Length: 181
Image (cartoon, rainbow, N blue to C red):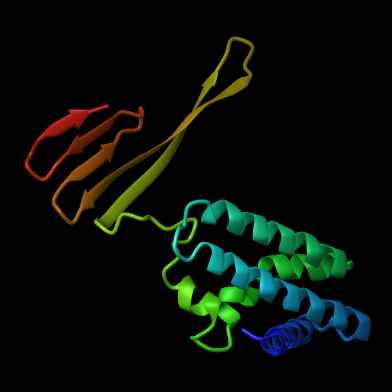
C-alpha cells in the first residue's frame, strides 16, 4: 500500500471520527489525521507479520489496541470525548474501515482469528451458565467462592463435553467412550 493510500485512509477515518464526535478544532483534527495514518501503517504491518503464522497474534493485537488507546487519550483531552470514543471504538476499528479488498490488512484479516473466536470449527452449540457461591462466616462477613461456568457442548462429530457447577468435566467422544476430569 502506498503512503498516499495510508494518508487517504487516515484522513477519511479522522474526518468521519471528528464529524461524529463534533470536533471542530483544526489542531485536534490534524492530530487525529496523523494518528489514523500511523495506526493504518501499524495495522497493516501487524497483519502482514502474522499472515502466515498466527502465533502471538492475540498479544500483538492487544498491544496494538492499547497503544492506540493511549494515543487517542492524549489527543482527546476532554474526558467526554474519550469516553465517547471508548464506547464506540469498534466503529473506528481499522479492519472495518479498509479502502479495498486487495490491501494487506483486508486480505489477511479474513483469515485471522479474533481473540474471542474459537479455533475449533467442530463446535456446533454451547450452553453456558455461571454460578457464584457465597458463604457466611461466624462474624457474619461474606466470603466469595469460586465462580464456575456450567455448560454443555456438542461437537459436529457427535462428541459431548459437560462442565458441572462443581468444576468437574465429563467428555464423551463420538464412539461412546467416556472420561471424567
